[in-house]
Length: 387
Image (cartoon, rainbow, N blue to C red; front, side, top):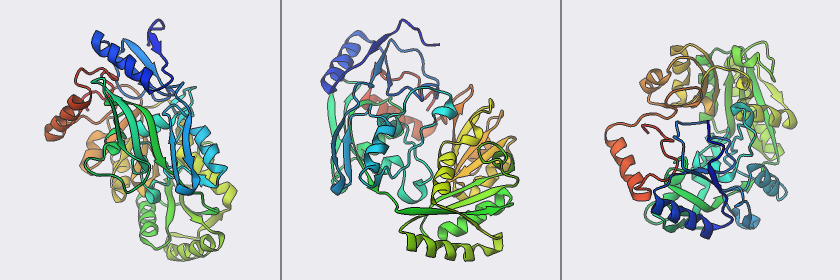
């Protein structure tokens, strides 16, 4: 449990962040970097000497809707950004999940936290991951150096794409002080086709066929019986869902064509726009698994192999990203089955190593990167464990 007396630093700007990191380096004090604090329970972090909270660095610095670019401090909440861009008919294309109920936390997820964890929602299969929309940043390294990388346009990267390096680093390399992301126009409407009664293997086949058809899906998920029967869906059979977004005429035409292409998998029923949005919010937030006390794994695998992982382990699963993302409730270590199909797993709830242990050349490369950015190990000590 975190020491209640631990010092909490709350800088208001990049200059204050730099001063805090410089002082920590001089005194050999470690820092836990947090935004909204909603993901502090993921990973095996050791107690730090102080907490560096970015909650006061929560301003939107520049938003140019006509350029599809937004710059903000890392502590701005996802909810605020979603409201801001929605007012201009736009969206965060990587559809970041909040996961507060899933992780049973009370904080508010932030943009910096979503990028640091590289979290993406169902739209990843079409729009790409969080890192693909991370254009640039300012940060302070563990060396006590202020740095900038990337910029405010998409085609500006020369040399190393450091934005992608920081995405998914979980605050272990640098403290973000400003980030620039790409936004996109929101879809005018959406619909979801539902197929019922498919087993996991057959569902993955249906999703694979749909993804390879010229229909431009923006979501493909499967809830086996155990997941479909839970709240909020309370279904009576497995459900396979395929989302289409865009202009109304285009969505209607593509939905009809997709239903015809999938006729061998059964009759497809259709959700209207409102019910479709509600359904995908439930998938994004993994609502079916929120109240379950079992360990929760987030598994990334080749989409065609998702069902093989579930077949090899004991527990309940839910598929997103056309089978490429598997949420699994299981008491067992799922990693052997995941490695067998070329994937990796992260333990989001439960005890044990949260992140996939690295070995060989990959471990050596990771160590060199860490040494380049934070040689004294000031930031989030032990957060990634053996990774």
